[in-house]
Image 1 (cartoon, rainbow, N blue to C red):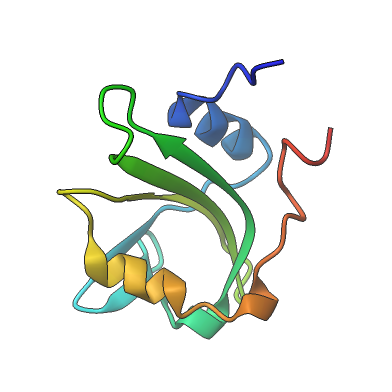
Image 2: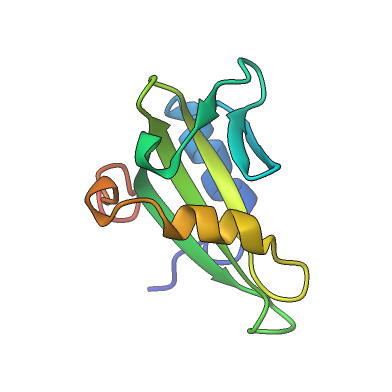
Length: 113
C-alpha cells in the first residue's frame, strides 16, 4: 500500500510539528543556528531522530530529505534539505558530519505506527 504522504513534505512537517518539533533553524557562514535563540550547533550537537526522502515528481534527480532533529540543548525541529541544481552543498556537508551514533529512527512516524 502506498504511503499517502510520499509526495508531500509539508504533510510530514505538520505531523512532526504536532509532536513538538517546532524549532526553526538556518545555516549561514558554516554555522547551524536556531532562528529564535540564535544558539549555534556543531554536527556533534545534532541528533537525527527520523528522516524522509522525496523524489521530484517531474524529475527524479530532484531529491529532498526531511530531517527530524533534536539538539543537545533540547531544541526539536525539522530541516528540509534539497538536492539537485539548487542544493545547499555546505548544509549537506554539515549534515554528513553528524556522527553516525547520533542518527536513529526513534521518532520516525513510518516505523512507529
